[in-house]
Length: 399
Image (cartoon, rainbow, N blue to C red; front, side, top):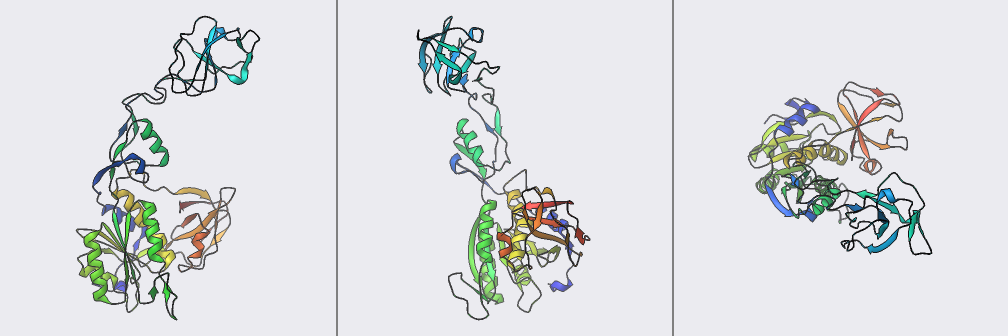
């Protein structure tokens, strides 16, 4: 293949479109609903009952007729949650009732226990006044057969509660894409090892694995490939055969040992781009194989982190059939910002202050991984723009 210096650099928007257009959907599987958080629904969820399933008291109090509010009422029974009323409520009568209990059919009002006064006669009277009936009516939230969750939705913890209430205990979801991670470079050693002179600990693979888990993929680490073309090829070929997505970090720049794009082609990958007009992450490579989609990400940890968030994470969601995708938030810049060059779109680590404005954190470049631990987002600075004014609206991707 041509050297990286000979390949055209493409705009980030074009790179994102190419990656999105290359996506294929993963297969579906049925899993227990209580372990489905973070998955993508592959079917609509319908409720098998009305919610609430009966007229339900919203407070602890006394169930009565609204027309008899302010009258002395005989208390005929106490209705605990989970039990049906046993005695019909007649004229000038009421039932003491607990929150969540079934409201007697004859009653259209529950006055709160705080507003009740017990009289020496054993009767009760409401001394308060309320426009609310304090009753959650049957089916006012959801009717039986009504859709409660839509296919393509990212399942959140609150959706688990909805599925439980709807009796939906087995849920059809998209499978998690298998994602291989390969680190490249003779200088890398395991985090448990003490680096010798000239060596560094491998942080990228563990960072990427955590990002993949958060995005919904199933990551597998294939180890550190030395700067040997044959060894790298064997690892890459195996990873492609066993996964939906393969990420190789390092070995994609212009150095003497940066042969990852060549190895990708040798493994049957059709390279679609090797350079993107984005900072950090310019030497990002992407290609397609009949079995998998393959990324070559820069070795600098901030670059690999950001290109995962910008390109790989949206791809994972798309492969699992997610309809919502990832949305940037429009926020005001908290300070003036300037940069030396505007030839590429830039992403800057930022933190959101108490006023809802974003402020860049201290950032020394694409190797400054500690900067990300202080950030809660990355701010987009468009190509051609050298500066931002305080208060100017910017797009921010939450991280």
